[in-house]
Image: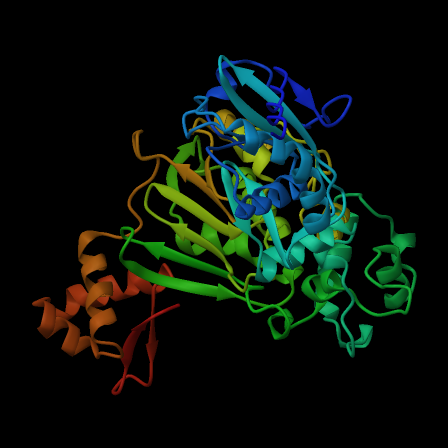
Length: 474
């Protein structure tokens, strides 16, 4: 009779495929932090080849640990001994062949249950899994497509989105007024001297690093100085609106042109048309107090302009309410800042560094990443609540609010004026008589209201005296 087969030897309590596990940049050390899945930890009860996407996502982000043989709560459910043996033997080569990443595979045991740990290093070059790219964000494995994939590949290769050159656009096509605004602000804020501008336009663009080696304009140059940047970047403009509530907009404006033109106009527009100051007197001197400090709003809006993701096609949106200002902009904020609440602690890492550098030269911003703290300090000094933020990995929402305090200013419009605006929205280009009859108001009363609304920039009269029609501005 043939000899009986020898039993398979038991696996030891702990085995590693490498002398030491690769370091993970953000691996938690406290046991409490290991009780939930997060940006560098994932649990799987069994191995499936689909989990190669998780490994790819870890490699493209901060690295991470994939635990096989644990349930969704981190409890050890175990894998069969034969399966554990196969994973130790085959998984390192499979991961390397599919993703190009060298991982460490370690065996652990709790009681009679085995589980396998896959330690994935962060990789500085882009990692794909069967032709697709994945990224770990929080506890989610995201497939990268479209603009997100473009930005990811650029950053992994050391390039920046705003540094990409654009063909068939000459420096002579840029906007002279935008250059004048830049020069005026740079001299006024003493960031540049008069001698710095005693050069040609092309030389100035070279000093601002807005031309590539072949002399082509970069994307940042078109955004900063071209009169019509929306020809290339659909979302390169600002929308400002006054809202009665979240659902009802009363009037709005759109600011287009170069970023320097937009920056030069937007703050004055907000404070002259969209906010009303509380007027008081210090002796014979008139004092206008707005609901929010101008320096804080200015810093927040300029931050939005600098950090917007102009590849998204979504414009910056500024919503003004009676007691609130909300600024929306698309942005690629690193998720680690979001998860750690470190937006007020990070260094100066510009999403669009060339745009940020030009705005710094103009004196619009600082270069030390202190913008968020400066906004909060300005609000506290002014006696209003500091700004708050809502954000995802693709959008930043900056909120200034006085809703929980006594109003600092009179309502922008009276109830009757709001009703007139609503009527004109439903019945555009109405005559004064039609509005008066429709709303049950006298002509004299309506004239006073129209005069006030005209001063506020909310309505405009078109046509001569006999055929005059009224419409909402914006």
